[in-house]
Length: 442
Image (cartoon, rainbow, N blue to C red; front, side, top):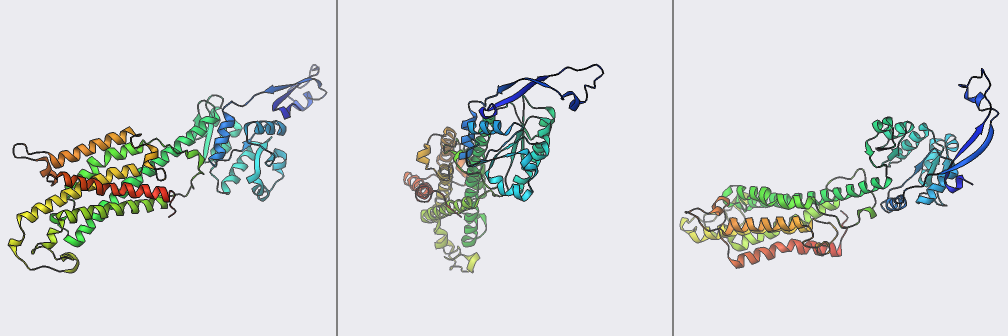
């Protein structure tokens, strides 16, 4: 009855020890004892443990109790904290001893409690769970827990009540001995991993777009820097000055979606994941088409219209060359090309800034997250925009323009409006994708 009330039972007994009796012989000493009484000791779980167990269940994390307590005591405590219910199995150490590995494997999915277990049995349970493909985190505080702590994927020992042997065998030490701290650590770990995914998706999608643009330029306009849509200097500016601050801000994004309501990811999951690869190609494609279109319609087509330039299909691709007329390559055409390259440079940077808003979440709309909820992204957006305007629109000082260093020329107000509208397309497209297809399967 006491055990069923989640009490740990201690019995008190006495007998007279005669002179000359070997008190080191435990079996002899314990013979003929007179029972004085029993005491039930209550060691209730912390208030926050049931909620932590419920959070684990929602997160797809299964909690199993392995204890040396009496079976009835373990079941009562398990029911109190939400581990054990009528549909679950509770196995005593003596029952476990008589089971084969195959029999244990068949029951493991239904077992919630193992009671009166030995150190060898704890080790065996961990091993069989791992054989079934589970990632096992094991908590323990005593010397007898050390083998199982060492065997588990993540051994967690107690910082206050744990022994030195247990701490040495574990991978991490729980300083406050609080189970809910483990759940909080899992929550933070999942959020950090999600930010890493977002960061990778942002960086690779931008780099895929940049590399594709260079290949596109090389095929159609030749491989010399003279006709590249983006010059090497501009690419350095994009990747070092413009790309860095938004990427760092993205890495500290506060995840608003409840990551603890999703199942654990597979241990074999790659990074980027297949859905991430789809989004990388999707976003990169939009940025390539948008940048190339702005470049062409802003005057980049002048190089194919000039008589001494490669023909409409490109000299390097098909060997087509127009009739040469040196006077045909006018100063006007050169200005148009410089303006087109500057427009391409500007729209690509704005594509990056729009894309960082996309990559804050692969499912949740930026409007639901709050466009300015991450103040560091807002600050980096403002700084990058100011730097872009300074590099493009800054006037000449003593005959020198900052834009000359990055091969840019001033743009008109209409140019900037077109640049911003085209760059917004990647944001609009991704918002529509999140609305109609929030979880792509690739």
